[in-house]
Amino acid sequence: MSGKAPWKATTPRKGTTPRKGTTPRKGTTPRKGTTDRRTRVTVLVALAANLVIAAAKAVGGLLAGSPALLSEAAHSVADSLNEVFLLAALRRSRRPADRRHPFGYGKERYFWSLLAAVGIFVMGGCFSVFQGVEALGGGAEEKFGGYVAGLAVLAVALLAEGASLLRALHQVRAQGGRAGLRDPALRTVVAEDGTAVLGVTVAMAGMALHMVTGQVVWEAAASIAIGVLLVLVAYGLGREARDQLIGEAADPELLGRIRALLRAQPEIDSVEALFTMKTGLDSHLVAARIDLVPGLDSEEVEEVAVRIKGSVGRVCPGAGEIFLDVTDRGAGEARESPAATGERGGA
Image 1: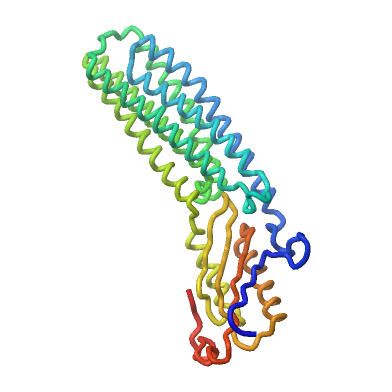
Image 2 (image 1 turned 90 degrees about the vertical axis):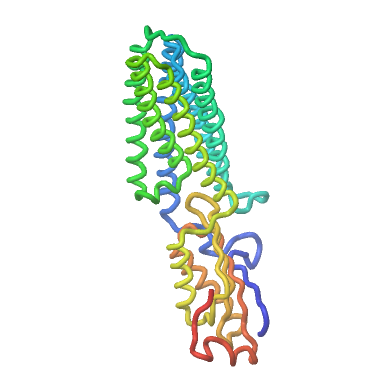
């Protein structure tokens, strides 16, 4: 046997039944399902809080004629619509793979997160900046009759948004700290609630300074600041979603473990290339181009490939698809191979 002998580890030999080991190990599905349920509850809590708060802010903003309060109302409306997007993401990304989408629908989670980022930018950020600029140019009336009620609404909103943020942060800790933020739905809720707490604080400061000084510039500046904050958050979330949709590689730590495993196999002469891609929240595609030591027949190559695939699956339980491109060096190449010269390594 010589030359290139591509071998796809996930391709069944007969029929359509995949080889043993192509599905995730037992125990991974319930964990993912539990995580999804917790994330869905977190999103629903945030949605309920935002709907109530948006209505209260809108009424208070209209009665008080407060641009900062109206900006916060737009912020809460944007967050509410985004939570609807995230609920759609949680439901649709769980669909199993089919003929048209052989790698599943895991990346749909990132698509809906991208729409949520666009919603924050357009409905929240742009509207808030517009409200602030209009207040500066229009010389809003100096009336404070509804401001006390408006400040009370913001105080209640601060408590509600804070409670929602604490729940989201609790789930992040339960899912392993920074690792929990890999979930785009949970990451978006944390970003929204964190921005909401900061935005409410800025709005309260702007309204209070307007009441004390009688100058609308403070409240207009608060409205513009809220808008800029939302634009920055939307940009960050959108960039994360874009990277995942394009096809982001596995985390460097996981990539290093897979590479070290391949290099440690006695039958592997060198690892020419290793590619990974996240196909969902906890799923990966792994592809490697490897050179085997000389002298292996086709049956031995098959056995080695199956064993290596199983080992990679244990290191990376989310590797639903593992592809190996195997090369068996010819006699001439074998004399110059890393195994013959005592140098082992590769990509």
